[in-house]
Length: 303
Image 1 (tube, rainbow, N blue to C red):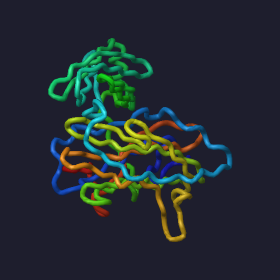
Image 2 (tube, one colour):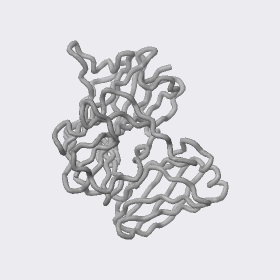
Image 3 (tube, rainbow, N blue to C red):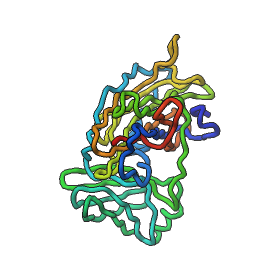
């Protein structure tokens, strides 16, 4: 079985990695998020085509500088997890106006309107008893959530089930450096993906999730807000083959990531990884990030 070396015993081949960052400045941002952002938009969908036999991946260019202004791109989740209460499924969001919401899973498709008051709204999806029981008994269920607010529409993923998924952390020397470019500047270094059996092609889709009290969790991908792209490499027992150089490792990076001050911003990096094998399945997890080379904590926080 092929897997990252840090995930010993993991049978999954399609992996979602979330790099949780440590505090980026001594002055911590106000109003920390009440929950983690959950899986990235469209997790497990839009997968690339399998690699051609014996075809090496083309060169993959690192992503350049990007700025997180703190201005929301639309409504955002306060937590990436929601639990059923009776036959209701409440989902709390940060909002800027009244809107409509739709939630879809393999067995559920429900819509409702919501009212926005003082920047918050609790969407209450009404379920049938059988739908509520199915969600309550599920484990690892992810729903597709669409929020429409005026001319803005955002597509999100939401973890559902009896209880919030227990955070599991990806162990890697690489991740999100909170102050890699200065007090208000981070850098993402992709984990050094490995295969413990034989070299195999991997596809990776990177994301940044950032939180402010005004906007909730917002998503930024390689193609802009709410949209990312796949990057292809070769995982070997000693790491990504394309990164290995005679003088060391030259990994894929994204940055610098500039955070505009004054918004109380929290930052998390997310990577989806597909290990090409005969029986892939989807997993999403949290990974190492560092406010310093010797410290690992929960979020990058910027005042």
